[in-house]
Image (cartoon, rainbow, N blue to C red; front, side, top):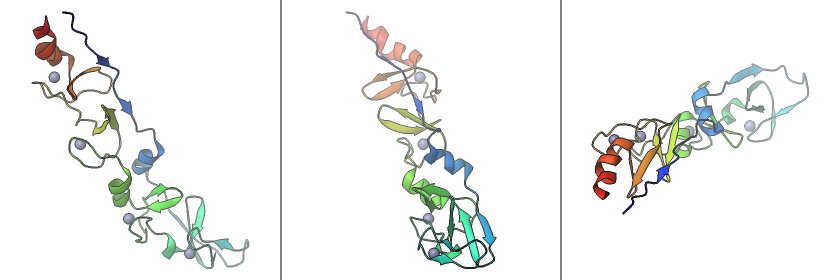
Length: 165
Ligand SMILES: [Zn+2]
Ligand SMILES: [Zn+2]
Ligand SMILES: [Zn+2]
Ligand SMILES: [Zn+2]
């Protein structure tokens, strides 16, 4: 009997998605105090009312400083690093909790590189061979799949391929 090995072309790196990328880079917060009436009224990106005095510029909009709040927890963002979701600011802890993919292995949010394989997402070093070596599998290495578990080529050969000959 000939044993057919399905070699899966692995692994999509999702670090190029803006969602994840922005968490690493953060966004910069610029606080300016405009003289009132200098260039016409500016309107708050949240409440849409005209802003007088202290103006916060971020995400290509202007905001009342007290209205630049996390979309999730509604707390004001005073930190200069934050994330964006649909044009609204999100603080980094909320962003990681709500919008980052969770690792199938450790269940924690994945910040940065994601390994997508077998309908799950993993941290880069949490996508591990289910065989005896137990090593994390590198991005570019093809892996073998057996009963929903990933195996490196060496272990796969030892465990499955040879026994079928
Ligand atoms: Zn406002
Ligand atoms: Zn928040
Ligand atoms: Zn993990
Ligand atoms: Zn292995």
